[in-house]
Amino acid sequence: MNRITKLLVICCAVVIVSGCETRSRNAHPKSKQNSSEKKTVLTAEEAASLFANEIGRWKITGKNIPVGGEVEPFNDMLETRWRVKGESVEFTFSPLINGKRVPFVTHREYDPQKGVFIWRSKGEGFPETSGQDHYNPATKTYRGKYIHSDGAVETKKCLLVSKEKMLIKSIFELDGEVVFSREMILTRLVNTEESGDLPADKKSDDKTNDMVIGLTKKQAAEIMAWEIGEWSIRGQRMPENEEPQRVEMTKTVRWKERGKSLEYQFDLLENGQPVTYRGIQTFDAGKSLFVYRAKWGENPETISHERYDPSTRTTSSYFFPTAPPSDNKTVTISRRVGDDKTQQTMEVFHKGRRVFSQELTSTRIKARQENVSP
Image 1: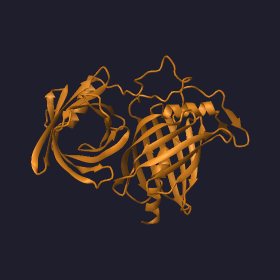
Image 2: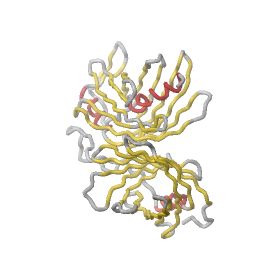
Image 3: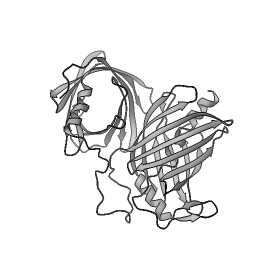
Image 4: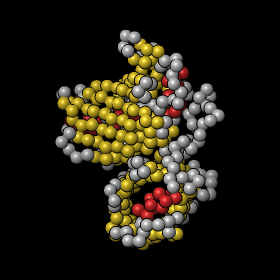
């Protein structure tokens, strides 16, 4: 592994979670300027509000940009929870490294004396990394500069676009020269059962559906129409602590009711025998989400709520059995690439612990019918 490749691998955890807290909707009247450093120093209460708004699950859409190399897109998911409520948080995520998902855990707290956020991150099989970030409420921006174990210098900026979205850019230098950069968009997936709000932060005008991206029925029909056609699906499924398993299947999508619902058919081999599974997708205009129902083999029927973000061409979904209770939860992220390809990542959790993941690429193999528009 050369020096640049090693740097890319080690820095996976640092780029994603360092300095990315979501700003509270309130201003920070108690914040004060540190005259010697000309930096805003937050109070412990203000830092706790920032932490509280970060609690939840986030989709990550990004790209690595090596100098002189090809751009490498990637997707991931990040979950944030309290470590000590009001004082510190814990991030968990599993970046793809050398073809395998590697679990990382990052702890983050605030030092009110220095006015900085301090973080420590450890990935399975990787050395611990640490650093500090400063937050400027006037620009809604985190900034940090870190020196890695091999002498590489990383400069990072995290812009808080809204309560639901963050933009991150990092630049890496070796021996004084830029070797690559990384850009990411973090978007909140769904509201969690525990919002993370502290008692003082909870307001009567809080909205539970802030993250909804409103779609008209016409827009929803156009989004569904894009799916119509025949697709080749290739990828791998990865049970935790087991070797990856190859996945191959075909998918056929057609209108069930033109402009209103789709019918999906999946054909694959199981134990050498051909098997077909089906699913139905509809659009709930009231909630501005897609609803997908499916049944695979002897497993219980599942239903998923899916939200499509036109700005990133990304769909995020939560699957759950229609016959509760269940300790299982499935989360998927699907991104459209060009006109005839999608990339999907899926994670299955049992009692909060990930037990299975899957990465698939779908490529259109038969052109859509001319008359597919609603």
